[in-house]
Amino acid sequence: MDRLQIPLTAYESPWVNDDVRMFRNTVSQFVEKEFVPHQPRWRENRGPDAESWTNAGRAGILLADLPEEYGGGGGTFAHEAVVLEELARAGVHFGSAIQSTVAHYILGYGSEEQKRKWIPRLARGESVAAIAMSEPGAGSDLQAITTSARRDGEHYVINGSKTFITNGARADLVCLAAKTNPKAIGMRAISLIMVETKDLPGYRVGRALEKVGMHGQDTVELFFDDVRVPASNLIGGVEGRGFSQMMEQLPYERLQIAVGAVAMAEQAVAITTRYVKERKAFGKPLLDLQNTRFKLAECKTNAQVGRVFLDNCIERFIAGRLDEPSTAMAKYWLTESQCRIVDECLQLHGGYGYMTEYPIARMWADARVQRIYAGSNEIMKELIAWSL
Ligand SMILES: Cc1cc2nc3c(=O)[nH]c(=O)nc-3n(C[C@H](O)[C@H](O)[C@H](O)COP(=O)(O)OP(=O)(O)OC[C@H]3O[C@@H](n4cnc5c(N)ncnc54)[C@H](O)[C@@H]3O)c2cc1C
Image 1: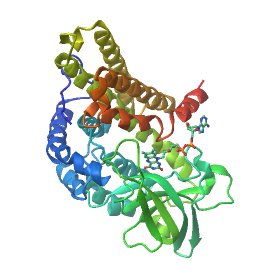
Image 2: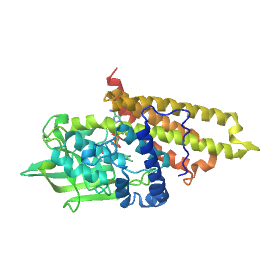
Image 3: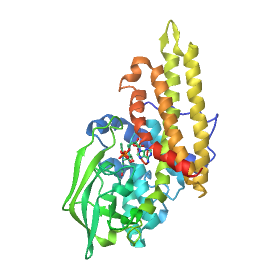
């Protein structure tokens, strides 16, 4: 995608310092050179090239906010945000956010041995991670999952299926939510177990799911048929903590989504501004029409208001003070705003806005799912409402 830099003179996020600025340069150059030219192929293959993971690892793009002692970038969420922003501005869908999320589960609850075994490989891109919570019969209501992990000596025997799993086609490390004790009440039934999928009997990756957008990213079903996994792969050492671990980590994933939402909205305004200056109707540029100017003024204002709220959330997250309702507000409001802005910008492109060769058309299709995954926006409103 043709990328326009947002003028820095107007506003710069307060969490950006010299180090973060330098990191942004590295990420932006890497994405431009290594990812952008291959997007048509990724989209056609319904997923990124295998070597994109190791290339990203070598460039230091993966696990930017994980500690250096485990091979991570040693940065803060500011560094993770930069990666997400640069990918979003370039129109690249690469599951590095999921890679970071899984690494944070291991960092947060894993044993020292588990951290040393898995996190460095994820940082180098030698391993690709997926997180498998959703099932055909249970998405929002995670307590209703039916995938089971029955203890059998030194192993768990896993049965069930998962759907909509991002990175699932390539993942060799799946962070799986399963019921270790189906008799336990509600949330205490669920545990998180790391499944190393390479040559694993009984494990099967289903077909690539045909999505409305985000075609360059793989999303698949996963099947587990008497899959045996060492009992030591349980995260946190004690069964029944999976649900609370997910509730603790989901805000990280939701903030990642909010970062992408604002970056895409800003990019939509930037490319549309350029388009309406070039495209003519009735003998003058579209920008000379008052409706065009007003619509873009509204979009730019919405994007800027969103940016300031997001920045506030990022700063509070880095300081360890971001509360759950605020994270839910960010995920809900910023993704709704992203969809409205992208839709208005598409309208200003006329018929060309509906052509997938135009970035705005792809943005429109890509944006829609932001209101659904990682907890739908209706669930976000429930979380906000609980704080009333
Ligand atoms: C492209 C894509 C990638 C994804 N990646 C992953 C992944 O990597 N890992 C993973 O585990 N999952 C992933 N998901 C799944 C995603 O998180 C779920 O789709 C989402 O949580 C919603 O669950 P559901 O689809 O089962 O919808 P449902 O739960 O069936 O919801 C249907 C509708 O009912 C509404 N609803 C449900 N409960 C309530 C309520 N209590 N109050 C009000 N409204 C409610 C929902 O908001 C929604 O509008 C992905 C999904 C997509 C589309």
